[in-house]
Length: 258
Image 1 (cartoon, rainbow, N blue to C red):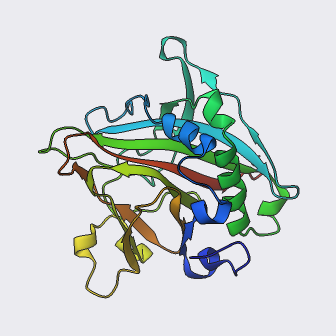
Image 2 (cartoon, one colour):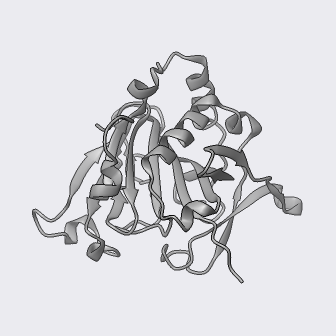
Image 3 (cartoon, rainbow, N blue to C red):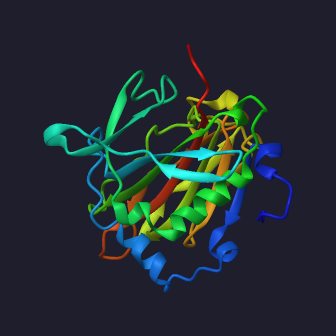
């Protein structure tokens, strides 16, 4: 797996895998990690997919490429809906074409968690930008997402449930934990398989297939170079709820537009 001292595999090959627990020297017993894990206990259901077993919170921030400075964008209050943040992917998610999804805001404790800030700095260091893009701030989306399933006959599903590209130039996924889960298999494929299922990809043409199993095990994609997918999860053999919790981070240039 790539470390900070190596070449940007992500940019060269379109995807890369990382072990941030090793990179940061973080153990599951560390207070900051336990605090981070606790953020997933009461994640509200995704308001756009309440039956999909998907729970989430979302925050937005700004990264200054010239200084490495990061700051959070304030949440927006939507009356009875409470504090939310808008998330827009144009036509990149076929389930929500042209929809600005208002997603529950991340807590202040999550925003202040030092591991999230380490993740953001690490992720930014793996990206590369043109001279024009680096002259403007970068919009950073930070998603806390938990797939959870109680009924052994059901699945919890990510969106979209197909090989896809997200629209943001760089996207990172960091596992926080998985418990009593079957599934959650990641597949990386060429862009031409966008909109397909992994079973539609001919033998030998998928670029990678793997599962994130350890805390802070991670992967990233360069959006224009690959499509990617994560399979639904099912409850495992144990009695407890099956859960898979991840942090997703995306970077998009904030170009001037007149």
